[in-house]
Length: 348
Image (cartoon, rainbow, N blue to C red; front, side, top):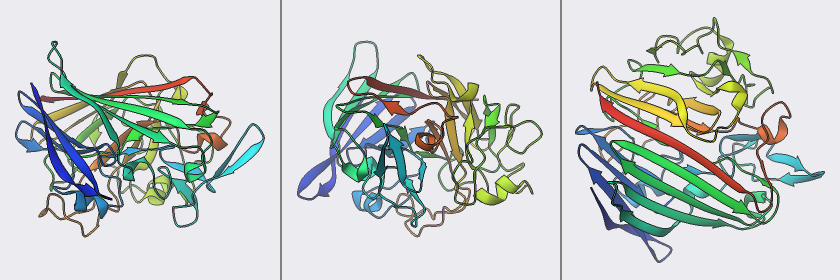
């Protein structure tokens, strides 16, 4: 086990560091810019899309590997009402919604390093912090956030905690794009299983209608393993809306848990690599890279292509500040928000 630090670039006159945690068969690199996972190599296969330089991330508009917030995913009309007061957020998705925290969300902030160490139990740990001031992107409350990445036994655990001095809404996640066959391959032949019996239907702006739909008899039923490509071109109207999958899948009505439980497993026949996802969250957003066509190549040479990778974002249900039927995303002043997600890799 080891953790190393190197200079990744400079931003506004400040050094931006890169940390790499290495254990037998796996290495994970994380930068202070956006608290982003820049690379995961398991069994000599690069399984997360990313860029070799800070400039690559500065040119990125798809949140690769980043922590997104204060509220991940979409908030309709870029506004919500809390205690009778309406808060206007940054309307950053072509004027139709607030997306992933706004114009300058946590994905584009420079995080501070709290510690980077290896412990006696064989884990490598990196803890980063961020202060989000009251009014930033329209949100109420000064929010203090800690995110810890832990690598142990071929499993990457992301632990989130946050405290606000005023009531606010919060929904944090990591936006890594996984390609278990290796960056540059396709996810269409990869097998996915989801421990989710409902999904969230959305309108043509990808905003939830406010209900959960049973996956039974739909292309959204991944309770039994199947390839991602099997139904991705189905005639179901929700597939047409997203251009593929870009939906939140829900476990147990979206209820949050005290300890992480299994929610997804994905594997590649090409590499023989499997990733098991466990989380305390009740929802997982699956986005199948339907519009992954940016000109910014991965790692300098690998073209971005449609369905090259899949984002599996463990988080609260989209637009829940405006949807009374969904579990509340409100964080009360002085209370602690917490979330834990585990990505465990193995060779099959």
